[in-house]
Every structure is written in structure tokens, then in C-alpha cells.
Length: 357
Image (cartoon, rainbow, N blue to C red; front, side):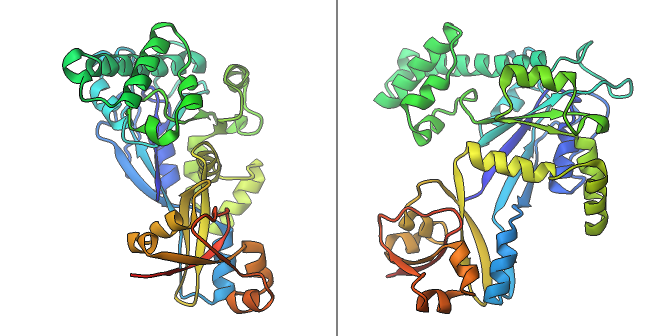
């Protein structure tokens, strides 16, 4: 599986610049006027994982295949989007298709880059976006709960929609839904406001270490758990450099990790994802799975026949595979296990599936 993150925010907060940096492309226009992005740009990016190279070296693999993440650069939203202002309806429909939302928040002053509001206020800007999402959700819920449509909704979905409507009308957080229903059931509702969120505070170069007053105020209100401080412009500059130059430049400005790596780590955490590997002479490959995934489900990521005909999974932990230099020594030294249908795959497992076709 691959997960998809939508980059959203007000116009001119740096969404397209960040998208270009993350995808190392110039696919998204980045210009100094509102609604530069109309149709969403989509970039599929390999997920960096140093374990892949180490495994490929041990297995003497001919090729390495990373798992991927998709970024979607979505048109800027304005107040009134839920009523069709700006590019509102298009914007909102595109958000429904993503697994997680990256809220791009402007946290820098500039006389050169137009701001749709007279002042820089990241808290206000986020509230505008989230209010529009709530209003869009409310309208969607009301339509689905109309008598003519209600009969087509199953009992559990009906309960979720009614609870969501009550929360929105009473100005309560929709997080209560996450406590009572599983993620798969909630995703079927298509509600925007319950999607996992990452907040990216876009800063200038002098604020990449430690942030600034805007980021401090934002973190005081929303906490730093799902908040990243990134300079989209600096990320773009880094991606234009060669590998050695990139490393030196990052050390010079005190940047320990790229924005892409930070977003992937946050994304995997909030979406509760893990990675397992397959490794042999032909290829070493990474596969993304949900946490607490059973071995047959993990096998199904490779091919549905693997899941249907699952018998056993030959399993070695990443540490043991590296230490024992591959499958043969891992087996001879008692580090390879045969796991059945109830086995919960762990992050970093190297798996080889036995199955009937």
C-alpha cells in the first residue's frame, strides 16, 4: 500500500514550493498570486530507508525498490470555500481522496510574497481552513441524513454521521469518533475533519532552527506532536544540490533532517503504518502495511494470491538478518522462524511467504 497526503492551506503559503521540494520536481507552479494551483498536482516519492541498502548489500540484490508516498498539491482555500467561494468545491472534493492532510501554515513575514490576509497569523489561518472543512462536512451530513437518502445508510455509518452532526452543531471536537469507531469504518464516511493531520509551519531561513514567535504561538495552542517547522524555500534549494553538496549545506545551516524525511516519519506515525521487507538476489523491496497487520494481510500486499493461499511466513528480524548475513546463516543459527496466520508482522521484519495457488 502507498499512502497519499494532501497539502492544503490558504493561497500563497508555500504549498507548491513545498510540493516541488518534496517531489524534487517543478511539476507544481509556484507563483506570487492566489489560485496559482487549480488542478491538483500529484507526485509519487520513494520513501528513503537506509535499511534497504543494508539488506541489498547482504543479499547481493540486483535492484532496490522503495515503498512510496504520494503528495497532492491542492488549490488554495479561502474563507467561504464550503459555499463555493474561490475554488472551494474543487478543493474540498480533492481533499476527500487523501489519507492524511498536511496543513501548510504561513509563519514568515515578507513584503515580496503576497498574503491573502493583512497580517500573518497561523492560528487564524488554520481556523479558517478547519471551519470550511467542518461546514463542508455538515452540509454533506445533512444531505445524507435526509429522509430520502437515510434508508441507504447502514446502522453504523448512520450512528457516526449523527454523532458528527451533533459535535459540529455543539462546537465539539470530532476526535470522540476516533475513540468509538475503527479507522476503516470512519474512512468510509468521507468526512474531511476526521482525517489525520500534520501541521507544517513554513518559516524563513533564519527560523529553521527553533522557529519564531509565530511557530511558538502555534505550538502553544496545537502542541508540537504533529507540528513540523520547515522552510519550503530552503527545502527547494537543498534538492537542487548534488548529494555531497546537499549534506554540506545542511550541516552549515544546522538542518539535521530534510522536510521529506520528517513528513514521512510523522505520516507513518499518525497513520499507524509499518514497513516490512523482502530480500533476495533479484531484489530487495520495502512494503508498507498498517500496524498490527497479520502475515496473510502483509502477503496480500505483494499479491492477492499470496493472501488467499497463505501457508507460512519465513521470518527474520532486520537486526538478525544483518548480523547473520542473510537467510542461510539466519536459518542455521536459529534466527529464522516459521510464523502462521495469526502472526502480527513487526516493523523491519524480512519475510518470505509460503503459499498454495
